[in-house]
Image (spheres, rainbow, N blue to C red):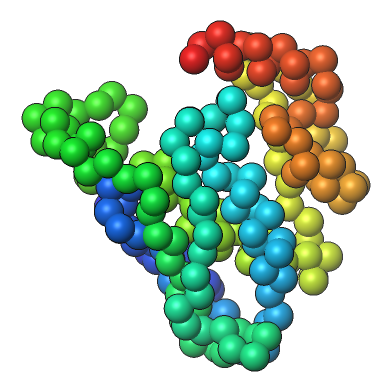
Length: 192
């Protein structure tokens, strides 16, 4: 399985949950793009484990470091490279996996690399893409439509207002119907 995705922009992810760092390289960004790092950090905090009883208790700060491709407030037109140091890795926790593959994980292809931890660089790249698209009037948003058979309202097929996406992005479990959201949270906690 490859680590590079995309056509116009190319995203390469690297690292694994039991290693020293994870990160990504984004190729194809034109020079001169200003990135709001506070918005990127906000998205990273939303994704970070240990921030909610609904997520894994593993603690990771997801503090990223820009290695190249950004200078003096703008992209430089070359590869934008980022890394996140792992702070709560336990390599010994993975030693038994060489003999016992986990259902639902990518252990056959390298489970440490294709673990939930690798969603951090994907979130980083997505946060940058959202900013670029927003400058073109394209707003991206999502919500939990269904959890354990509990349904939220679907998005309007003709589109939603950007303020709904902003509201959803500030929620622990993004839902349109608060009552359904509370029921979803109960189901998640019961399953844990």
